[in-house]
Length: 571
Image (cartoon, rainbow, N blue to C red; front, side, top):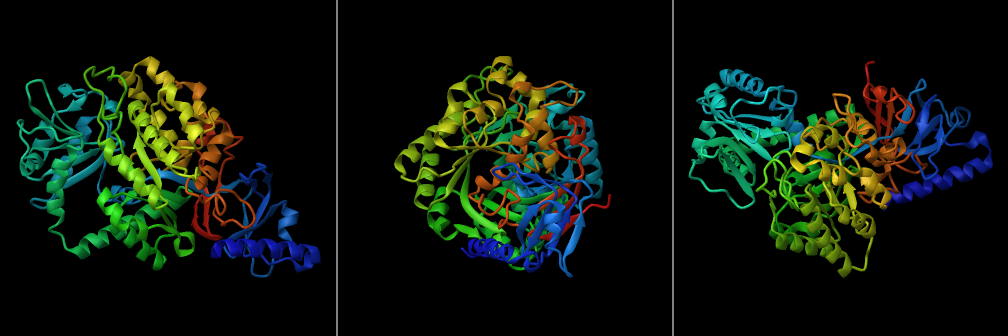
């Protein structure tokens, strides 16, 4: 409520003072001049300058108009013709995961399995006895060459086990929906060729029943449990300081990429408590919209006490719940209506029972919380849309803004449901071009064309799309995701179903005002409108007018949160 009173006060004050004459205009704390300013407001205004006071947008307009707000203590930023827009809102990523990814082996850029093995071998040389070696980011579909011996493209663990015979190893797939373990890790977990698949999971074996070392979806827990046992030998203080450091690293990554608001796709109640304390200590400069990740029993007990809106001067909002209905396409865990083209007995996995998800929907309705569900396959999306539709029918408030996270592969018959119900598609442009190398193999050409990353179809059906990166699955770069959204161009120069591209304006809105709308914050952020939070990014290229290849070369010049410069490029 306080922020709304501030907005009303500053707007009314500005109107009153304007009527009294230019000499009585309020003095701005900050003025950005000589910019190409895209306000992303309802009129899509473009102008030259922005004035900021008390952490809010005071005015936008021409240089002459805005410089009238200059006073003796006003800080002036000369944008030098650069592009000025609202701060980027990453609408789906993992804040703690992003930070932790900076503390483990980075496998995002490896070219093949041999490189993975070499990186692990080097880490093993420096590891203490019994210490776990952890990494993330490999993707078998992007390797050249493909491992000579493989199962569905996955390597066998043998080379990895030889590289680290004494230290347990687990390496998370880029998607986060599979992992590769070595022999030592499987020995500690008690996993053998006789171990049966858990519900919603798959232990990948070859035709003779030999373990590959790959664990998909809920089967990952077999390895993660013993890793957690190892983690439990650390002191509480060691674990706490590691988390705090990871959060600080995540914030740095966001600000250097122009991200001022971040939708965290799943944190525990304990992690939310820690974030609150860090915000109290002014250690988290990024605005966080956190989705609660907990089982239904915990939600029933605690949800009503954890609905938080605008905490710490709008640094923390908690008003949504994260769930999963299926897995990822790359690991063949996405739940499909028809089997995989390259694995014709496999329909993917339903990782959370539908009965449990229906119960979650009831908990969300009772506690006025959004339900945000990970759904990638067309069957997964269809089933969660049914659950949402049933919940909407029971509720008088139709402005629930429930979300489907990813919504990557849809049946034509279900696309219109998003717009009809008002379900938000929280999608990641970068996933399209990153995954395109294997999408047609998994789905076949017809299904890929019909329903893979169909942004144009969704927008034309009246759907709000908010954009993001899903970091650390992908790099936390809005620029790369924006480029993918408007070009759908792959690294080899081909285009993945170009008819589904977003326009430049649509992509910019998906990364600003739509992200604000998706968190019920469109009245305080997402556009450079007087009275809104002064969250601003200045970029080296105009994303609305520059040539396609120039987009990827765009640099973040300034990131501003609440009128304060929190990142400045050295360029």
